[in-house]
Length: 487
Image 1 (cartoon, rainbow, N blue to C red):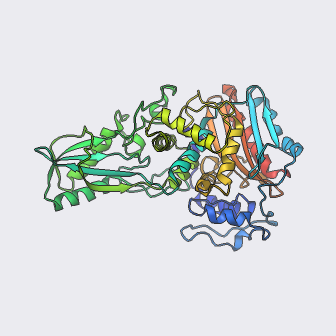
Image 2 (cartoon, rainbow, N blue to C red):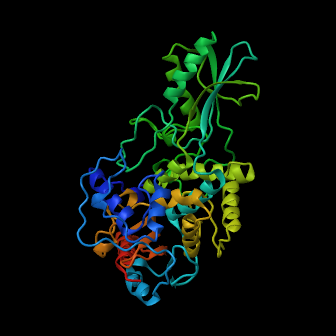
Image 3 (spheres, rainbow, N blue to C red):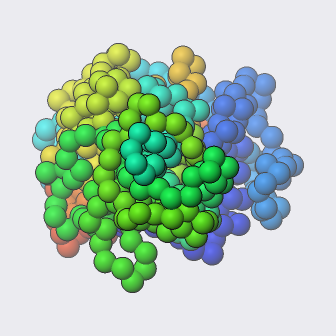
């Protein structure tokens, strides 16, 4: 969630991809390193034909440049997500959760990935805690369920010729990853999908305008797709712009300014200015700067660019803990379920999706999509049940959620984590991190030394300020213990 959660690392891409192939084909996490491969590798994992292939003999996807994979020892047995688990062994593996470094409120749930119930539960105090960025798992699941993994969002330009001067309106379709220009952000992430950008949209729009004989336009921007406050009232003031910018249906680079510029006061108008500059460079004269306007229903579409799929957006936002993308997906969930793109409608949509799939909230309440709100409360069992839902045969559309989980010691927000716990945990655990001041959490899946697939959620929200790093390391050690466990 916060930048401290991301830790994407640098200069380790080759080792990261190699390690991820190991975990996907050997350790039994069995899920794709990038969206699109998840279903096939999941089927291979669940096959009953014996152990998975030696990864050294498996060619990586053609677009992946990795060195040869060398794995000492025998491969793990095929993963079993339904096997009964040994509660005593789990308790021993998770003994680090008893550390005073985690504070006085630690709750957890662990169970088979494809089963029911919990082989291990720990709850000191209330059964809910501040989830921090593990909230993104719930948001992503709701978006995948309501929209589908292949759904995309379009940013368009439309032309209104009813006035004296034609008015061109840039219409935001809620693309969370819309960029200023073509190119890939240099943030060290393992996976970043091809992004739509306003420079390309300007090029297409200018070409179409000139073809129709229009060379002078007034420019409007329409960000009316989303409603309600752009900043949640429970967010700390200093989260803007350090952790997130005001949420908008129309922005570029998630509302972040260019280097050397100050904060973006209005993301939609800033996007319009960026688009207008690109349009002017392509021979279209603007009568003034961009102004807010609502695109009339009778306007003619001139140009369009399309976002990555929801599955690709989820892959990205879970791996690097992208607050902005999570909040945009929450609004799209609200639009799909409630007909309104706001914090409140998104919350209602999430609750309805969980209820429709038989997931008991257990006193949980979520106010935002990213987990920045300290008012959020979540039971660990809800996170476990969401992961189980994503693994179920009945909901293949949710599989990208599992494929997006960072791999311990190799990718995303876990690139440099779990290196002090049992060595077997590295590569055998995939999890979403959650960090706020006084809060540390992990939720994900693991394969133990016997090939049992586990779903887990570990949460602590009373960590002393001077124990933050120790608490994170302690929780990492507990999660890594699941990979080493013979449970």
